[in-house]
Length: 536
RNA sequence: GGGCCUGUAGCUCAAUGGCAGAGCAGCUGACUCUUAAUCAGCGGGUUGAAGGUUCAAGUCCUUCCAGGCUCACCA
Image (cartoon, rainbow, N blue to C red; front, side):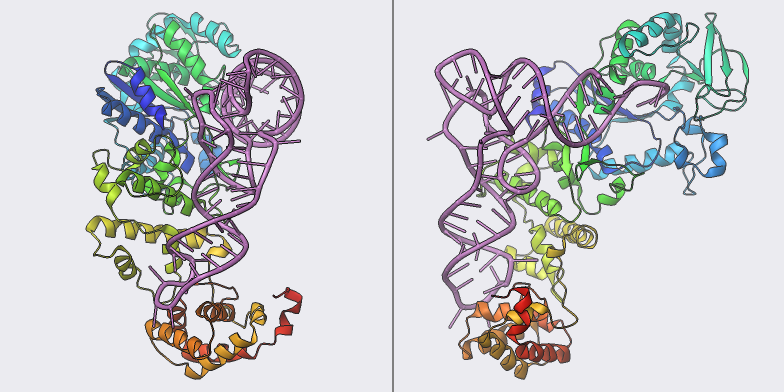
């Protein structure tokens, strides 16, 4: 976790941290790693005394290039059009396609404790004329840009290519236009039918002054221009951009050679892999970001992203594993250590920072947060499956005193997460189910256990969990059976496994007639039945 | 083909160049009302391979092998 603190120690003076995103469609959980890293860097800078501004931009004048995300009849009309100028495909009140997707992403920030000082939308910036100086510089130095593309990225543009994209006055597309001349005030552009494969231009051409929102810079130049416009000093970016000869290299060179400014410090970060594979909404892997957030509350999600160094890929496989419970356990361990409670095993390096930066509220009282009672996630998931269990009451008992408002909030958050986990992610072994018919495993019961079950069947009836629990111990004792063996017998008879939840409450939650019938069936079970199953 | 990352116990990961560790899982045991809790204990390794530097290498250098991501059209 030292990475953020080390970065903070390396810089001097006021800092501007920036990131921006093209709202081209639905995002997945992995997309949140960037914003979380951004936020942690900001917090680290501030806590080491640097005056810091956090900016988050939406590159919503970029062209639509994802056909799959448009309705079929919208493809011809909107492919290549700036995202900000496409109507929302979903009728939920957003002004545009870009606003819809950007807003659903940004809405997650607040929950995660990420609070940029300012959001900016490029569709708002261009019309103000703030970008005009950069557009002019890019046009004046078009030959430098062409040379740099060839040198840095081996991309060969025609000699007449100019680094500005005019928004076609006729069809409104920006992805299909090319500028071939610049006279110092106006550019000559063509909206070509086949400039790119994914969109078709309308054939318009003409001279236009490319200022005040009538044109935009290509993405790499826009990026570098943002650094100058906002005075950005630190900007992390995903490894897809940070690759050698890739976008970041191009933009760095543009910053130096066209806008004559050192690019910001880069913090390249790796992605989040689910089950060893890249997340992809289109391939059906990886829930959309707003979906998995239901199973992983903010502070645990922050922990997941913060703990490894940014340049390490995160392997996370929540499907059918205990990855989610372990994430909670790890967070709780950090809290215990921070609160000075004893913890098992060794602590990760820099654990105190991890816990502090994992908290949603940057101004939280870290000591107080660490001290609050947090129920074990797996224990909760377990209790939720016990028929009739009063989980809040049980947790109050476990804590030994009433839950505070904050503790009740955490409990509710964890209960909700555990429900989602049980429904969508938990492995079979974490789920328990009362078997409809006598489980095969009941054949493993020995004579003493069958005797116990038979006796208990005589006592069966409607009673409370507490009463059942007492009865179980009493019956076991009167038959001379060890309590452990007695409970095992019940679990085998009802769940088909040697262990389970508090048996008394399990039985109390079932229909009394069914309980009596099952007890008798299990008592009558012949040990030879289990021969094939290899019973002990 | 270029770039980045990874390879250490079954799984997830640690280890300023200085005796290879932890959590979880597993196994054994204890427990007369927390029974998937709690407590005690145990096993588990040619650190992907081969060279090199060093008194000393999981760690640094070289070369391989394997896996993953990413770029090479646009943003």
